[in-house]
Length: 385
Image (cartoon, rainbow, N blue to C red; front, side):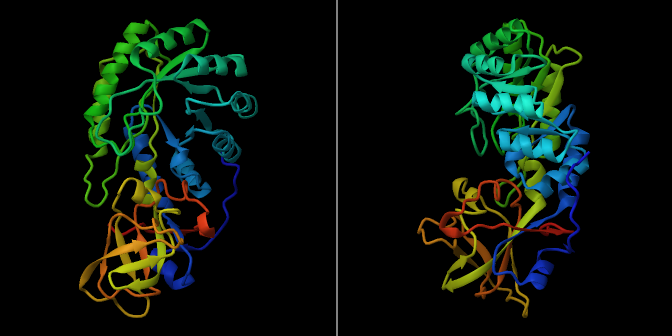
């Protein structure tokens, strides 16, 4: 059960209602718990295994509570603070230490203080470290497998993952050390190719055969995408079908736990950001959030997000135009790579709602120049479809 007692607060209809009530001169995250819960339940119903939410994607307490209430009680964590947040908020939730590189002190604290029993590794030295720090009792070791680069926003095998031969060797060592062996991979964030999972599972099968080890855990990672403006994404059903087909081709033990780690696909649509126009210069506008804050992924991934203008004193014109958008800092690189299409008469003090901001926004924001968005409100309805 959750240890955090919910704080009663006003729930607004939508971002426009937030602007009317608060007239904020600061950025406001508009969380839609019902949207979050709906996305979570879909994964719980459709995925043929255990669903772990990737906390790094959006660790806000209200986000975690919405997902917990929807039925997600397993969490992919990558640091001691994430583990502590999950285990202290939800007594019956499980945290899995999915970062392949960890300090001995952190491993020991996770195991001793928070009861973490599942650790990911991709190198013999990390295996030795986990065994030394925990003693090994009740521990599951999941070997992270490197998979080929595919059509994805970020290649998550560039930094982590053992080559197949080493992965097989590590599985044998895990078994020889008396630990519960598992295997994992991650095809990449915002993966646009359902067959990538089938390809990764085929490599998984080769590693299993080469190792001669029966897996207790198979974690197919995350990477499930959403459709952004200008970037269509296959339906999640296509990914689930590819995963099921790939699993059917493996000779897994009956009690092998199948896991996945969705993040973006669950939370991206569950939050929008309300920003205000500070200044207009012809076809340029300055807003009160930017690439050092909530909008860094728009810059790093050159991503488009949906936007709409909100004006309280009258209606904007129907003619549309494109605008270069600058953030609030004094750094000249604080500019979004893609222009916003807005009413041509956009002006100072208008608000702009930026949709699909639930993933990698507040989680990666900095305090550069003293600017930091930290206001969250709840809304009944997310960004208009």
